[in-house]
Amino acid sequence: MIKKNLTRKNLSSKIYQTIGFSKNFSSVIIDNFFESLVEELINENKVKISSFGTFKVINKKERIGRNPKTKIETIITSRKVATFKPSLSIKEKLNR
Image 1 (cartoon, rainbow, N blue to C red):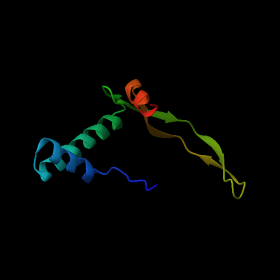
Image 2: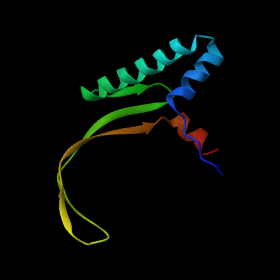
Image 3: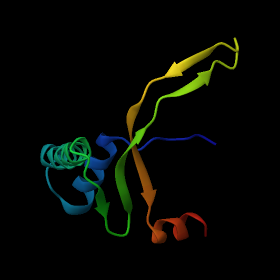
């Protein structure tokens, strides 16, 4: 089984085929959408897309990690991480 990733180009192609916008305009729509999503996450706002899911930023604390190969312990610094929680309808569709 070959796994295929969905890219920005694939998304803009789908918009082009489905709605009929030009390929350039479809590409601009996709770019603006992701740009807006990232801007909101940078501002630490929650982004909820109805019937799809919620993106939010969580703060991870500093912790001790271990290299499994060498067994050497190192400190993993605190950082912000973007998370995604799928909506109930997405979960149901995935588990059919």
